[in-house]
Image (cartoon, rainbow, N blue to C red; front, side, top):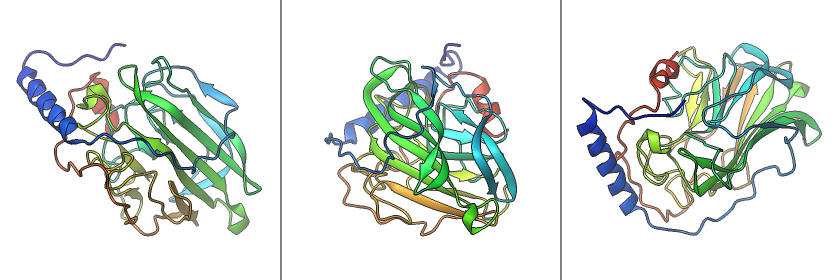
Amino acid sequence: MMKTLQNQQTSALAKTALALAALTVSLVSAVDPVAAAAIRGGAFNANTLPANDDSSTGAVSIGFDANFFGLNFNQLFVNNNGNVTFDSPLGTFTPFNLTSTGRQIIAPFFADVDTRGIGSGLVTYGTGTVDGRNAFGVNWINVGYFSQRTDKTNSFQLVLVDRSDTGAGNFDIEFNYDNIEWETGDASGGVNGLGGSSARAGFSNGSGAPGTSFELPGSAVNGAFLNGGSNSLIANSLNSSVAGRYVFSARSGVVDPGDPEPIPTPALLPGLIGMGVAALRKRGQDDESAEA
């Protein structure tokens, strides 16, 4: 289904949103992307999600049991828009607040990924091993953004690692990033992949209980996650010595976010906080699925 902007009572808001987004773009300095080396290459490629916008897989096995905040799972849904969910597929393209959602979600880069553009990579996923342990991973390598844009691409990865050697249901979560050039799709208030309602990264079990959700610093902050940004995903790390790798340990059903403030490297892009404008939806379904 085509994504369309509302065109009657919201026309004035649309013009304001585009103007602010354009101003955001004008404030961003151009930099050459500096690739990290966090992504575990050559792995998790057994299955491919065909070129699409906002689609998902059916339920797929992760190959082991995972205790995620007291909820036990052995399968999940891979969603094109930079996340996996345990409860049901998710087609939402504008990222919602992961700390207040009702969804069971792990999102290394929740934003409007569109793999239909010429030159975009496709989402791949499957089982493998990490340090001799069973693992499940999803690759978003050189993926574009809505609508079929590939002037900027992102490369990131989610890996779930079986740690039942430390206790039943225990596992690790890895967010791995090698290149982040865009943060927003055109229908989420972005202009040329920047500004608007920008990406979020983190997880939630959807219960709303204290300690059951987390977002990386820089989530929803324009420019923060980009290469050279104030919370550059490729330049920082969490619970890891590898630049671009963020590791979270799930033990006895509790996911430890570790130090919630990664140490930023000097920013090459301005902080651009607060300039994003809530997007006009591509589809009416987006709002109702975001907080379901």
